[in-house]
Amino acid sequence: MEKRLQVGTQAIIAAIAIAMILTGCVTQNGAARDLAPPEAFAFAGEDPALNGEWFRISSFWWGDAEIVFEEEFVFENGAWEGRTDGYPEVRGIYTARGGEITLRITHVSANMFHEFGVAPGWHSREDLAAFFAGLGAPEDFLREISQMFYPFEETYSVTGDTLTLTFHGDTLALTRR
Picture 1: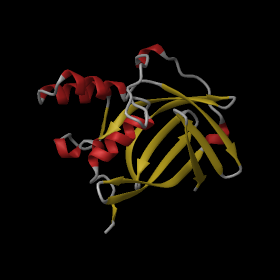
Picture 2: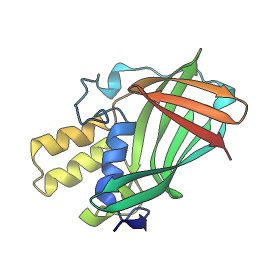
Picture 3: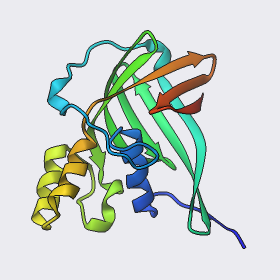
């Protein structure tokens, strides 16, 4: 018997996995990516066609439960935010030209890590590294946290009210809100 489960930030492990995929730290099959550190990229320029709120309903199976959630991206003149079920999870900066977009996360919401006791609000890479190091987190985990903040490049197109993003060969079609 299938169970259908709608969640927001309660599925913290799922949220981290989604963030790791969306931020380019890992591909959907779990393979790690070799990425340049955040300092290696200078941001400039944006495509005004991206401005606005874009969403899609997504799901995946966790055991015998289907996890259903809304993914939302908000782009505004070089700044962006990623939300799950309306809860802000990541924000950062982007540049977009000619169908290519480069995004960089600058801050992660405590919503992503609330079960670990991270204080409410937005946290930088340095904030999270210090917090988790203070908990005695292993180096591999600290490296994964750091990689969330690395810039990642993908392709996009805007046609009418549809934004198509291609992340690591997977296409996300989002609708303008």
